Length: 80
Image (cartoon, rainbow, N blue to C red; front, side):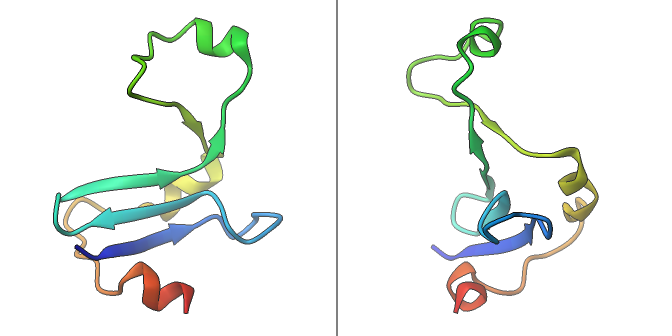
């Protein structure tokens, strides 16, 4: 398995998150984002115990790759 970093929020205050990854083994995406702790917001969503909700800013969406884009570098290489 290799995680491929696809995009990172360029305005992140600590340069670490939110970040979108691609897992080439499972052919799925992982989104690192801000933990949602606001109980009122969480209460309006039916979230099973084995799942979680993360938040990311709308400014990150334009950085998401297109459906046909193929990842080419691993997350470890990018984090260096």
